[in-house]
Image (cartoon, rainbow, N blue to C red; front, side, top):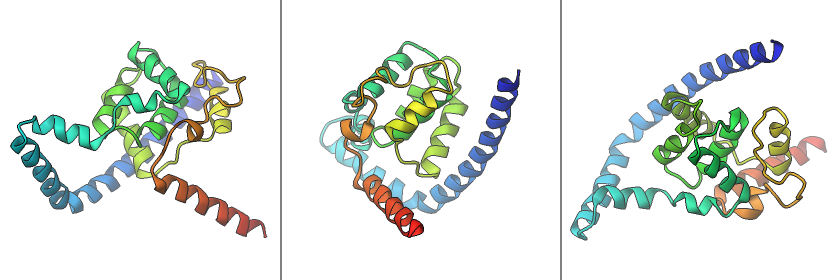
Length: 193
């Protein structure tokens, strides 16, 4: 099938890009390792002194729960589908990773992606590293609907509702996301002048 070979070709391209991104992130982690481990140790010591579990204190400090994502009907739909072990498709996983990375720690996000019956831990981690390494912003509603046309699984549960699947309306992202979007729009406006 033509669609299958195209998908396999795209997959190979993504694998190469992911390996490059993985190498870049490993280099960056190696440079920041001493600083981050010192900070982590301090949080673990503080949690232990308070009588709590150091691991759970660090995890909860690092990532808000998936419940925050449920403020978006689309993200609740994706979370539920993953919890049921459904294959949410390539673009479903991509959208999930692009949005969830702002609300979940790496391990939690990778664990959720692995719930997709057709996605291994290695693939989940590679997708996370790609999205994180390229610093992808969450997609707009129109892009989500466009991607949805490319696969069977419905990413947007209510595509006829114009308010549905607008993660920028439903969720609060870090300021850096909005700053990146504003900078992009300024550059685009300057280029058209």
